Length: 428
Image 1 (spheres, rainbow, N blue to C red):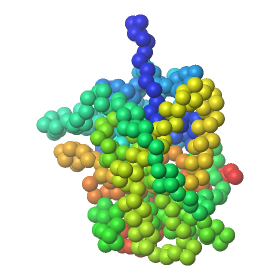
Image 2 (image 1 turned 180 degrees about the vertical axis):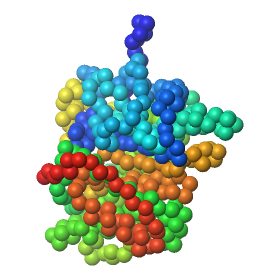
Image 3 (image 1 turned 90 degrees about the vertical axis):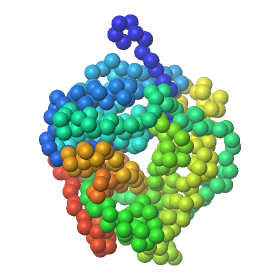
Image 4 (image 1 turned 120 degrees about the horizontal axis):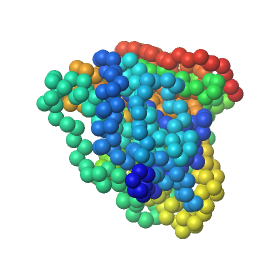
């Protein structure tokens, strides 16, 4: 570092430890949050906004280093520069120990923030984008927004850099029968894929109020309803020989809602929800109720504490501390590949994005999507606009088509868009 300053470093949190081993060209472990404004983005104002944002998020100014036993994060003196979008979304960020772990770009009216999952999770990424958008708009409309109150993250620098997995690890042995339920065989998505691991994006914009009303009519949450629609859309594309397998959807859980944490590092869990159509109803209402009941069983502090203790316990084993990193990489990659066999697809609901009301006239919408080897759905809402984005490397759009057609059949209008790129060849 400059001026003889010794670079500070910190350990990876429990969730982040697996991502370097699981990263590949097929799955970069990169996700993107975007803010689409009602006006073109000014590059220089965005650069100023980024520099101001990084003062609030100093932990993002780091690189990933390899140690003898673990990867670790080290602060970096690199100048982080915004640029016009010039590559397909969610491309690989981590190349070597000098690589920035996030990227800020713009295209016309859109501000993009891409982050490597080692650095943060969806909750932390959303805070970063909200701060970046706030500082940009306040600079672009200095007079109109001069009285706009700053975003209140209500956390000290130490609290935001906290490793909450370590903080809330109790060391108690979980009731394994509760966490490791045996499920029938899981169905896995199949089919030709895009060339060179290109990520295909299909996005639907729907009115939030109509979506919420539709869920309330069925006495379920929006997450439960959309999970049910996704499950049936997949089931309708399954071959007859696969119909006895369950469709399992992995749902990331923001642990900040269950533990008093203010960290912007990774602090999430997942629950896998399965539904077997063989001998069961294929009505959306019945599937949604099943999903709702499973979520009620798992989305509580007791269950999530047990799951946190189970996952965090491994790194506290003495043998795990002394095994060299190259062996850990092999073990962690196998563990991750095995965990992927427990679900068919993923649905992530980031929730409602809140910004100061004075800024609403300048913002059109927010978007979020994630890298994936197969198919993943992400959704978020801003005011009365809900974005439902599918990312996929599968050439077929049949699942997405069935999903959005189900919404329109329910009386929910859908505005569709998708990305185009060259080289849409296929691979096995």
